[in-house]
Image 1 (cartoon, rainbow, N blue to C red):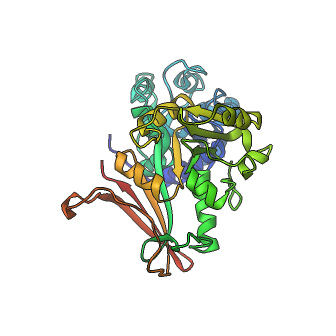
Image 2: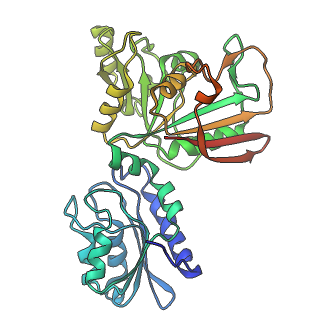
Length: 369
């Protein structure tokens, strides 16, 4: 339903959005949600969904407002739930608090909700305004939306390359292709995803930590695609007591049982999945496994092989390319052979955004589905 957005509604919805991100890293597979309660132009209650299984944003805001909530306006980034889950329906709490008006950022795509919460509130005489800052609210929970509607995580490919499309020199040297400012931006991108994924080639070359160090946020789960389990036992991800428990190695039956045991002794997880004719774990099996973990979004930082494989599979949702004003000539291509022989068959990107990061450029776009 169209919205009659006004300056005041946008102002308080922006505040709700600011609150919602406080739950990042703690609420998945649930969405991040923020809420504020306003009366006579003043905020009298604030809340956000703090942790999976705990009270939702609306309930926290109502609790914060107390008895003053009667006759107020509730601003919430996502439609209040109408079903029993880990917590009672939020719509009942909204009605019982005597809230007169609810401003909703976006309709909840969860089939159990999907407009039912809005309809319920209207039957109770509550005025509802929909879709205020809808695009911002959707972007906040891009992973949740994909996960709740398809059962698959949102996959973002991240590439750091030169102007001529190289991620390393012909000798494999790649530190650093882009600027420090771009690396900080990449860490902010990491913080927006539940998991980060690389292939064994990247691990052997860079021995990365895969953490959020240059930005505020919780470090995501680390996923390593390593069909034959070639990871060295002294890899940084395994020798750190802090990192190992949040590290998952995806291998196939080709992996040594002894190596599996050694890795698991260090606290990491090893998962054996089906493979294709090349001996690589299939994307279908991998995504099904990630679904069981409740992972709603993955940042894929793997090298040429993993990025290309994901594109060929058709599962990639978004691409973020950091482009440095450098030219290498020969070197390692950012993207390998996609099997495209006709320009009309080129992969089409939409929702293109380009911004400057010091001397670099950041190109972000979605894959056309």
